[in-house]
Length: 132
Image (tube, rainbow, N blue to C red; front, side, top):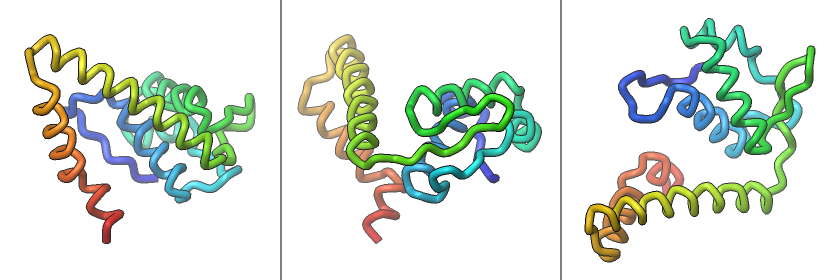
């Protein structure tokens, strides 16, 4: 499984792994019941520590996207569209709350914050792929 890792990105490596796998699950590239690579195999393939892959998988379990079965592995959980949307909205609300707090601290007006959100949304390569 190819997961692009950027060591210079602001996001921690475990979060990059989690985000990539979450996107694959939510897009349907990884189907319900499908096994993910073992923690050790993924760590070796990505050349990261086992601790890093363990944390990524633990985050996916916490997100409700996978189930860890002791002694068997980690498997994609069947997704209910309403639950997926609700979890996504919770994450978006948390991220937006953090952005609003940072903007207030820096004296950024709500209008400028909205304009920046629209710009980021328009520049997102995934959004451009979906429109095609």
